[in-house]
Length: 252
Image (tube, rainbow, N blue to C red; front, side, top):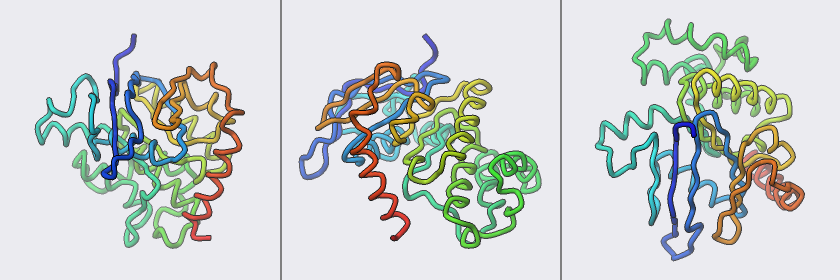
């Protein structure tokens, strides 16, 4: 068994109004693995990702990162943990008055205390890989929606965290970017032994993206190895919900 990146045991989360989004949730994400979350309503997956990012606490049960639970960490320990996590959620955005180059290199300057020129050198190859290099001196408003989202992913990838939490890449990105991110996933997994928890991708590509799938169904969670998951059960409902959310986020 590989080392655990993140693990939960009998975890529960209930809203303030008493609505229980999930209960008895247990899973384990190991180094080099990719887990996929499917949920309707999607808020179940959103809350789980926020818990994994240390931004929200479960109402019951246990969760641990790299073998340590949150109650075993002091303030500095929690800060160090967050430096090991890359989180892109549905509202993640770029800093509007900074160039794309500065947006992507900012994390290196902040977390690794790199000087600006050194951080620029570090991000050059990733900018080229994401086809953003020629736009590096532009500001977010001068880029397309897809380019801005690519820059958001690149900003997290360049920090080389050990746990990636990605929400809704299927609504943001096209097939070409699917392939690009999959290449990045494979490279990171091999070189750094990191892990990915992704919510929510279209069911058709789960067999390419994931090792296991966690399906939220009326407060219960069902765990499938990717080879045992039947995407046809969830395909139409996910597509309808995905199209609705995509129009909402784009302001259409």
